[in-house]
Length: 202
Image (spheres, rainbow, N blue to C red):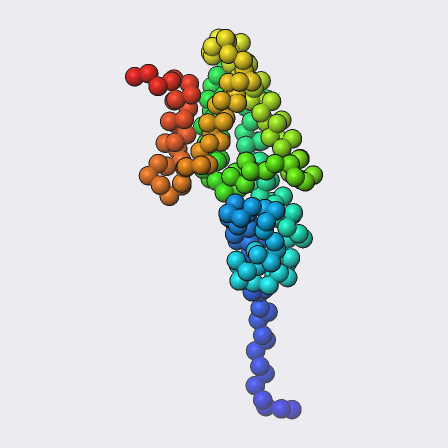
């Protein structure tokens, strides 16, 4: 019998490189800077400093990365709007809460929302995302209509127009809001709701 010391078992090494979420973060940033159509998996691999096969370990294709990004942008706002639309009682309170929540979601997922707002329907995936946005818009317009019907909002402006104006303002925040800036997300949400529902009069 040999008296040699048995070598300790080697610990299996993890796959080097980035995890799925970090790949997605960098991809979203690159898509926003260069455009989705103009960005290749090779470009993303170069940005990450990994091989293309390392990316394919996490995502099947460039389109699957886009799908994950759009899902991130749409899922929470869809849930908030669905909850508000299905709720009972004061439609005005539900609408105001939805506006504030939308600002918070935009701030928390700013790069993904920015990418979503740049989608133009160039593929079946993008068309599905646009269809989901239209569904959300329709639910919001119904909520505005309910708030006007209960006498909480002026009824001389078309509810669809009110919805587009309000959430157009919310969406415009992607152009200038920066989470690391002097305005925090909760303060911004309250300010947007105050301006929308109370106006600018002193």
